[in-house]
Length: 269
Image: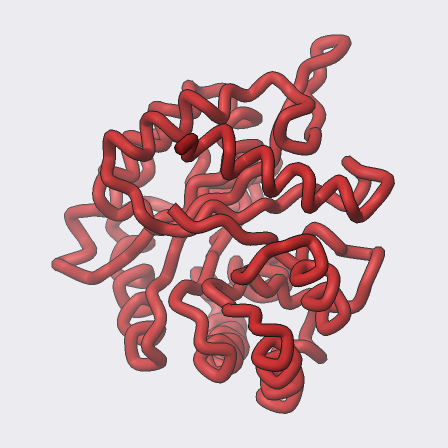
């Protein structure tokens, strides 16, 4: 396994390009780039990030856009919405290629308050296959993330779309906090990903007053040692990307401490 930090950890605290410097200062040599808005979905911005990452000796393994801005419309019944979203998706793929990333991390459409319609696997599956094919043309693998408020929110999702993928190389991103929030057994989601698991987001959780909150790894209740054991059993050799919310820590140095704790806990010597 490899361990890195997402620029999302610095959301609201530092601009994306400056977050790269913080990541390197905290001892990481690889990262995920979280692109925050349309102005960051451009080749010029991608080249700026690549130059800075190269100068820092930082490798970008994945790109994760602000998916709610266009990903739901990739599945829209409206031709114009679909086509506009497709063009934005391709721009992000171009940026990811410039950055040398391997994965595009996708949330997909939300399911909040019945917002998602026409989401049956027979319609969604072929669209996913098309998205994977386009990603592949840019040398990227689509890595669909489990998110408690999106289409992939339970262990049943992977098996529902598998018949429609026809050998397409869809990958999955396992998100610890989102799996914990789903109301399902997190390991049920992990196991459902099977051999398509290729990426992982790490953030701790704890429950108080009947509500679940996020925390820095090592300060919550999630058993990362057990997760590491399960991943080793699966032969997982991908990235474990530290992705805490920016309100879960006070000092940036806590991020470096959490990264070192993850390495020691999930992959002990």
